[in-house]
Amino acid sequence: MRPATLRTSVSLLTFTTLLASAQAQQPNVEPTRAPHAMVVSIHHSASDAGVEILKQGGNAVDAAVAVHFALAVVYPFAGNLGGGGFMLIREKHGPHGFKTHFLDYREKAPAAATRDMYLDAEGNVVSGMSLVGYKASGVPGSVAGLAYAQKHFGKLTLAQDMAPAIRLATEGFVLSAAEARNLQSKNMTLFPTSAKIFQRDGDFYREGDTFKQPELAATLTRISKDPGEFYHGAMAHQIADFEKAGGGLITAEDLAAYQVKERKPIRGKYHGYDLITAPPPSSGGIILVEILNILSGYDLKKLGPGGSESTDRSAAQVHIITEAFRRAYMDRGDYLGDPDFNTLPLKQMANMKYAAAWRSSIDPTKPTPSASLVRPAGFMPPPPQATVVKESTETTHFSIVDKDGNAVSSTTTLNGGFGSGVTIEGLGFLMNNEMDDFTSKVGEPNVYGLIQSSANSIAPGKRPLSAMTPTIITTHGNWLKHGKLAYVMGTPGGSTIITTVANDIISTIDNGLNIQQAADAPRFHHQYLPDRLDLEKKFPVPPAEALAAMGYTINRLAVADEKNPGVWGDSELIAVDPKTHELLGGHDSRRSYGKAAGY
Image (cartoon, rainbow, N blue to C red; front, top):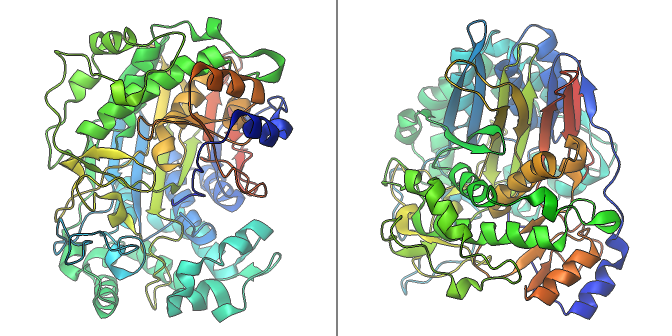
């Protein structure tokens, strides 16, 4: 995403005035309960599609395939065929055991991509070139990833799993006011095919209109019969020819060369739970583990929720968590990239002694300025040359658990909202602008000031670094006995994804919130650079004032626009009730058209 820009810092007086209306307590909302299976996503039609497949005898992976394809129809903002993503699977294996799998179907740079492709003759970044238009797209991986998941882990057929999406595209769905407004994207207006399909050539869709997509329905039908056509057949040539005509770089050979990667999940532990999460090219999992390793030495529950005005967070707790964020994000910036192109110090980053060394540098009474932060010696190799990463927040996540305890946590993206704005003529789907997640120029901070190593520079066939953090949490197990499923978690949000997932974990495990309260809890974020503590609008005033008094530079999302919701992320969460074994769904109330659904 290129979200509503995080505004410059505000004075304490202004901050207090603007946040005065945000002191409402954490909503006392109960989760959605279901005895057998649960699907939670950003769109009600996609959640219903997943439940439909589960009721037909499909497993969690079948439902995930159904949800993803449905989101490509009903949530073109981030749901996609022309993008990519990650899928974390906990698969039942034998009568008592489970196996975990991590599928990487992230987009890849085309063969013609070059390190400096977004620079002008003077070596300056060409504004917007990596964001909008044909050259902004990487080779899409979603169709390959979903077909791979269904073939290797599903129970039904691909055609069965895709039937709800095809029906939604053929018959259409009724737009809410927010959905109709989103379709007025200026980037799509620039491209005739996009403007025709999504904007009726300027006669914009309105609330209550039925949005039908016959071209997309035909494309989905072709994929359901032969997903390989997207990469090797007539469809691949349609995509390549259209890209070439627009000056894009993706060729039929790029599509034919695309491969899904199975990678080993990152694992960690936290307060009696086992974490299974995303490995590189996601930075999310290892940074999440590093954050929680640092925090494991604290009694966050004792530091505690802040009482009647803060419920979920006290200033003392936020301070300690923020300092863990700061330190882990310093390592994210220096070391992470595509593991197929780089050797990454993952074991060192997950070392508990390293976490203890970081923890000893945290002052319990005041923040450590990022400029003065020094990495503990003796643990990490020298970092590569620093460069810039751009991370978009227009992503979407869904979580699924089936009746047998199989679980899927999946995050997918076009990168920016509606991707590059380009829709493939005759096929009806939007292309990503994932090339913007690479480093465009060494040493030049992006609009968010987010810094990282040259491990993320552009190269042919390379996958850009991501923060997507699909996560599954179980009770602690051992070699004799597998732990029991406890949580399925994830969110969109670009660089805020990792901190949001961390906060969801802390909200439940440390602070005792139910899964719906955790999804709705006020959010805060720190990413090392820029050195500021970002808060949502609804973050309560008293701890915010206390944090400012401690010495933090406080920054509130969209402070200049009181009509903006001032939020980030979209946690779609599932918990298992340890007493009743019911599934508990928590859909993020920040997004009005999603839901938790089960049976």
